[in-house]
Image (cartoon, rainbow, N blue to C red):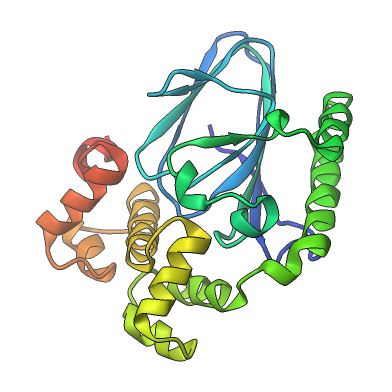
Length: 256
């Protein structure tokens, strides 16, 4: 199932990459696979039946944060549903919610469990509307309020480094990025891990993988080696090894 992809309002575009909306009115069970993309996020869902995440087989609440997805997961939903995902640039989790991003890699943080009146009010507003445009506005306002109260805690050097890695499709020397941010390599690596939950090299590898995945799924290649060398992999076996680590399948199996 392909989601609606919505550009965030400019007031939150500094820290929200994009918004995804998945909707279905079917009564059968839907399976939505997700792979590493480098972006943690906030997910709100309303569903008629159980909303589970495999392989953990966890029944999920209506709203939660999720960390870096390193190993592949599948969302299993029974019956009609609406899912709204705000994908964050990975430098906001610690500042906005005072959590260690690495602690929720391949895991989640339940906002409903926090003793916060703003969260309770947010859930009430979201639950009262089935219109995704309205719910996007409600979530955007909530996140803008968070930004205005927490922005002094954001590490904008790491934000710029993240954009640098993305713009270069992961094919950039981490030492050069550290120099551009006027940081020694150890300080840069420590701050990057602290803010994102990943090392800079891990993040670059995920961006590189995602670029190759898009090329593979769009059929924008003649031979597999086109993807290998255009995306900076050392050879075909290296590409297959990285691809399988993030999807659980070889490129050939995935493409079928």
